[in-house]
Amino acid sequence: MEKLVVKGPTPLKGEVTISGAKNAAVAILPATLLIDGVCTIENLPNISDIKISCTILEKLGAKITWNDEHSITIDTSNITTTKAPLDLTSKFRASYYMIGAMLSRKGEIEVGMPGGCKLGARPIDQHIKGFELLGANVTVEKGKIYAKAKKLKGCPIYMDIVSVGATINVMLSAVLAKGTTIIDNAAKEPHIVDVANFLNTMGADIRGAGTDVIKINGVERLKGNATYSVVPDQIEAGTFMLAAVATKGDLLIKNCITKHLESITAKILEIGGNVEDNGDSIRVWCNKRPNKATIKTLPYPGFPTDLQPQMGVVLSLANGTSTINESIWDSRFQYTEELNKMGAKITAQGKTAFFEGVKKLSGAPVYSSDLRAGAALVIAGTAAEGETEIYNLEHIDRGYENIEEKFRSIGANIQRITE
Ligand code: UD1
Image (cartoon, rainbow, N blue to C red; front, side, top):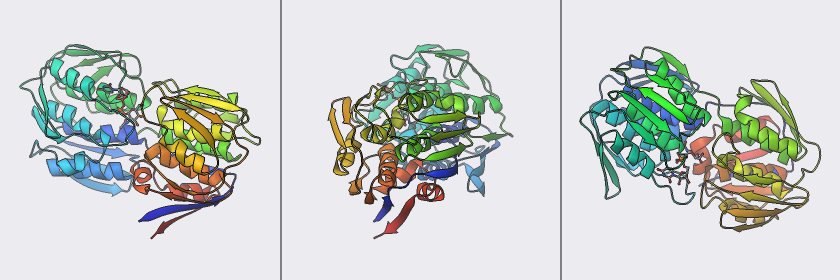
């Protein structure tokens, strides 16, 4: 068993470089299935979700060459099976993108129900509704999803709920469909724009990604033969911004798109932190105890749910009582029990949590319940007095590249220990 041991408190100081976006990369990899040929993808984050995605693609027949640890050349001209390996697809959420891509490419797919972080109910009804409106037949049985279609036909699709996954999945299935698909009430996250940019680079005709109406004119084929670089990770950048505030540090966060970070910047300024926006890097520093705040998580451009636990650490140390309303997921306050073991005073009731700010946290053994909760515990351990042991690292490793190395490079006293 592995654990991270963090000794604090340490104000994080220095420069850190952001990796490629996990949530864009895990959609772009399945999107390569739409290409009848070869393409190169750069700036892939070196995380376990990417390795699993590549293994699934190889099992479907793709040939992958690793150019270095962040870049692959992938040849999807010979897809040999429509059965995705069930054991691997159930390991992470984004395996559901195999459905949209394979329906488009082969007209058929059998895939395990997607896994991923346990954040409460994670239905995929909007994905299925989209596929069915495009002409597919979808059944869910014995933990597997079967989808089949003769020829998908473009049509208007109204999303009943703003969903990142359903927006991307329907986009994937509509790219090679006959005619035009219009997704109304689409999600607008930066990774949606990135997947659309990737597909357009390969020959797709997608307009409006990043707004709530996306128009996809179906094309005959995607030609490939191009190189694409994944957008920087908005959530990793936000994690380090909040780490700077929680530890009363001073960080220059490089290789990020600051436009994607506006909701986080606004909240950091509101609680008394400092932000200097340089366009492709952002400096965040804080030399006093942050003020209390009220946060509500919302789809982009609102405050991201994937930064809610990291913000929770900041507010657990703030002056006064703060409130977070989690509007996306039913069960995203599990990390608050771990912070309470470290001396925080948080009461979570349903989708709302109250943070009575304390002056300091103290180290304790804690368990990461999901990916972002794990990152929050690393921040808490760095801010806390004494030694924090963090367990269940498999969650963190799914989505953060070299988390301990990056934290060490900015001053944290953090070691990965195998017991
Ligand atoms: C993605 C992100 C995840 C992030 C979430 C919200 C990936 C791989 N994961 O997850 O990190 O927390 O966006 O920003 O990109 N819903 C339905 N029916 C559906 C689909 C979703 O009711 O068919 C609901 C969900 O239960 C949730 C809300 O819509 O309440 C948003 O979910 P969605 O945006 O789809 O999240 P994911 O794509 O799973």
